[in-house]
Length: 337
Image (cartoon, rainbow, N blue to C red; front, side):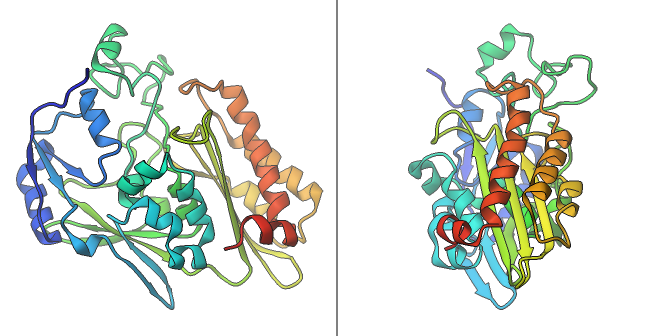
């Protein structure tokens, strides 16, 4: 049986208290949000913090607020709330749709939107027990010096597997990061780095406190599809988010196609989106965008689906989503709140 390492548990009641503790303990501490990923990782000895700082007693981090400009989600809002809260469903149904595809209802009740945004990158060779990893002499991300996925490479290729992030990127979301010395707001699309080890720009001592999602423009339609073996529990082995803004004549004013679980960060296929803008999207345009997305995807062998299959499914998911989003009756039936 896998057991947890020993640690001290602290539950601050305010954000200033939490960031003070984070500054005090530094690298010896980890933030505990829902714990659905951190606790299993600690059992596997991927992390062995001396201190866990729980955010569960900070009420300000578990609130959803709405104004004319959009929605603010506290970092501790449960995934189940993101999936079913009337404000989220009413304003950004595609975000609720992505949240509903995460794991199981039990894990959705524990997991949080902040935890999903900061989710550790994943790899078949990394997310294993200590004994398993030791048998292969470890990997670059934990205790080793080479990436088992690409031994001749020069970085870690573990993938980003956060279901909500491709959606939030396409929705132009921002996040607030707070430390003892400052606060900063950063576009979520600029927060990630295509490196499995240093996969985001969170600075030492910083705490993610909230996510802001702007109100989508008139004519916006969005959809998210996820590839996994089991339709519950599993992390995505591919995620495709498409956001379209169409005018009253169904001409595309804006298009965002964002891939998840392909690289170490969410990846927007800008060429595929640009191929749709200014057009009343036809089947030919859909095929072109799907092909551009397919060409941009370069998955490696780090899940239990073969890379070639995951790559082909980029084309399939892109095509299916665009066909549904450009069909008013189909969109109303499947994607509208």
